[in-house]
Image (cartoon, rainbow, N blue to C red; front, side, top):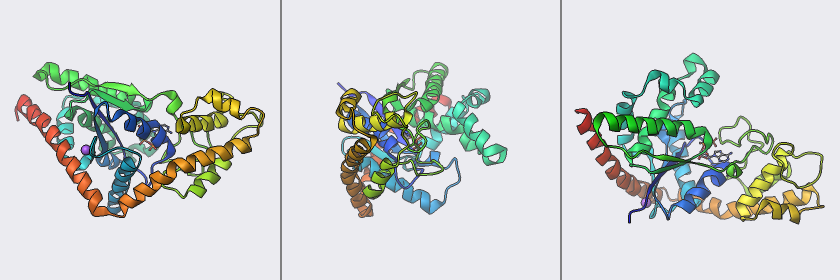
Length: 330
Ligand code: ADP
Ligand code: NA
């Protein structure tokens, strides 16, 4: 029996990924990769929707790929590639854009949020058609499941709509994919602002734990994480967002239940708990960081891995694209 196909990706929007990307995406990808025929891409075409310095973008893309591998995505098991290495993404996006309603695209809440931040002139047409490119990413591989954060759920819904629309106009062409929404317990918040999601594109990184940072620096950030005055290590997202976030990280990295961590730290202060968490984080990321740096030290080998995987992705994507061209009359 063939394995169901899975597709996911991340933008190369920073030099390092952050602990939320690791817990919310990479750890799950790593666990899913043996039961699925998995495609993981570094979506550099998506990154172009905001202004980028060319050489910096190229470097961030390689660093992101190295971190996927360092976190346990096996390039011999999963197909781990850079989006722009497979030309079919941009080509299918064009065709899908011709069956996407202008109003339909305009209803995407992420576009509405971003465009209101960037203003009329700072907002590119590419930002508007971003979800169409994402639909192309997914549909090219006849994807069955797409693990995403809930902020991307609407884009996967649009992808399903476009797949169904194309299939009904031109005949069965695309698999209609299912979103798999990340569990709320896998959501990590900013250590300094624990009601907003930790992000690699946050304005200040005081509350961000970077995968590639010096471990001592990460430990310091944990010791300084915002908590509350109650003094008890107890999960309560509503009233104790800071402590709850730290508990989430602790649980995700150790595999322990939140309740058993609460018991362990009952009657002890936040200092003890933070110190233990800092050790857990340092222990987790030391080998990941070392592996990523080792990969980045050998660019030829990393390029070889990425080229081989892009070749594999290209073959699958090209078969879908040829079929699509045929069906629409090109
Ligand atoms: P960022 O906000 O860091 O730029 P992206 O929006 O590029 O992250 O998301 C990349 C992946 O990482 C997605 O699968 C997303 O769900 C996951 N992710 C990002 N931030 C977090 C977080 N704070 N907690 C859990 N998962 C996250
Ligand atoms: Na591979």
